[in-house]
Image (tube, rainbow, N blue to C red; front, side):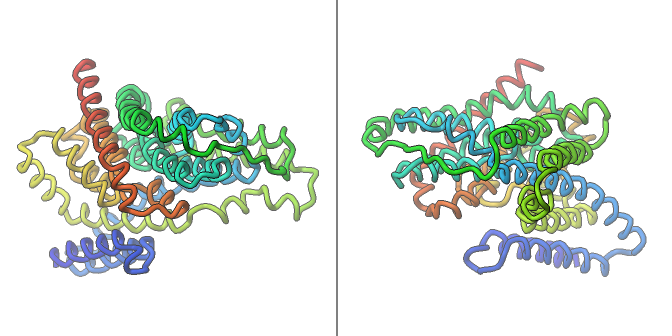
Length: 428
């Protein structure tokens, strides 16, 4: 029966990976995989009460991640509903394409750290679609956005779902994550974009210049600026809230959401109900990626089932023997796998395979896992949520990205990993 559990997990993984080919949402595949594995597990378990207690224990940890994600997504959608991100358009506008390349890189990197890599990539691609007429330059910027958003998100506890999972799980702390991961993240993006800028500099000068498109705003500048400031400030407040209160991060995110919600209510208190609805939390909730949240629920339930039946311990032992305990090689391999397989279940499996007894909080292994899982997905465009989102918005072909960005991403991945190992050696 154990082999049946593994078979269901692998089959579910296959359907998730081949989402577009089979025409079935990866969220549906993840949900049925998670639910079916626990159903089969109920026939294997010797004591149903122990199984139910285990399920409740795992669900508690999963719920923390889901509430955190829902709060963050809602805040981002509230800012966007007030056109807050349109203010960034003035910063992006430039007549020099090479300069535009670096501005887009920097903004994507920083926005990913404050929002998350998926939201930042969507915001930046949307801005580039408004600002850039030339399709060649726009596709180039889209590829750079994927690299920069994944790199920018990994060093922030709220910037990448995998880093967030490790933070919520207690494997890493916010301060150490920033200290150890910021420089490797910068190295990871600087080298590929530097090579790209040097290699294509002359060609970029001949590309049609960017143009700024001004749009009518349905909301006053004061309201737009206020929501952007409060929204971003509230997101930055989350790590501070956890540090002061020692409560789980999702409580800080819910507190931040309430601040943004109250601000929105005060700003629009004089509007009529119908007009105010466009700027409400209800509207923002209708726009968040609910299917994405269900995907995380399904895949985390599936991984939890493997952990419940001690299959991850067996996998950890096999991985340990294969690499003779070399944690760096294990983490780098997990990162390379995340280029093909979604990094969320890989990190979830790592958290289940290796306990805090094996590697205590803030051990360099966990930070290296955060780096590798966060940037390994950039090597192929299907390897990260940001890449898949950008691929869909700009209709980027898999082969086009692989030809132009995969090698650059791999070079950045190796360079950043070496930078991390160097910093870790110096600190310890």
